[in-house]
Length: 461
View 1 (tube, rainbow, N blue to C red):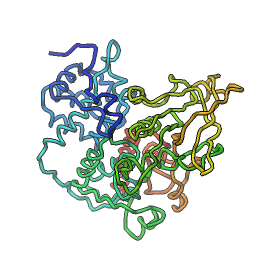
View 2: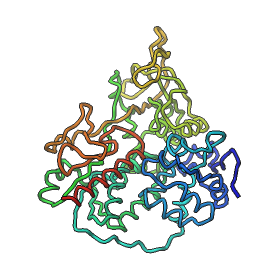
View 3: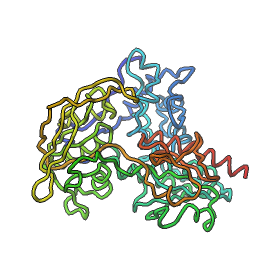
View 4: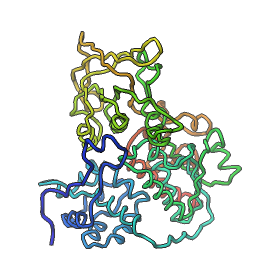
């Protein structure tokens, strides 16, 4: 019997005043009963618009139908045909703008909670599956993947399933890319990422850490001395941006990348950490995207009073609405329509405050959002002892500067077509290394497209 409720099943979560003091996962996940009830809201539409909204083209109605019938492992098999990281996507994918944004149930009510169901299915499989993974038959071809973030892991997984011998080269000491250094534990537990990566290892993917492409070895050497027939560049966008205002070189001014890496990868929040971080009393996070929300919520869990400083209004915040709501519930203070103009320091070179100016919204700019304009004479000082800049990132220039024949954009992104092919034969690229900072699922979609193109290229070759 279909469930015609206009409202979706709520996701159980930790209470705000409890979770803002720990790094445990905020969302607790559906029970089997909740998952079945939610799956029964799906109408299994004839045109299946939700599939068109998914960058990796998961056959959504089919897996939801299995959930509705209580056949959770069968549902996992359907998802895993398209996605190498279902437990990750179910947690961090912006479904509201993609599959759920296309859901017919959303016209007169709330869309089916596709992301929550994907998370439930993946978690059920990880907790209960004991089936042995069958190693795909090898086809004798070797492919190198640079970077173990979402685009690299997706490309590697898809190629390994086709029988390619894939080696992933990761610069850090732990595989996972932005999934391990950028996204906090309370949104994406690292044990989940490790489990997904272990699944790729079981189908034959080799992962080499502490290898900096362009320093340890170059792409040219991979394709000549090491015999890789194709290379996929999924190195992400890890070069942080700053505002170039006075005081950015003071102590306790961080890029969000550094701050989150220390917290997420190095566990700086733990007592006795070998990579400690300043436990500030009052923190300003400059920016309004998901990374700004992550940094602010981490700082709150370290005991600080935290401000989000954003030059537009709440309506223009680019962060996911769910993340903004969670931040508000946890006590983050939003100081919108204001912009930093100087970071103030004390005699010891530490942050003692930040001078800001109020803004008002003018005409729309190229992005379609109203342009913020300074209000004359509206300067004020914000009392903080730490500033975190969450203003976006760009690709690291190391790979382009050490690879012959690789065309790049002026801002640093690698030039690649819709299939990931770059200006150099046999070299493909995708994800943030091409587009600049974007979402995990878009990076996965790029990795998937590139894997298909590499397969076609090597098959024809």
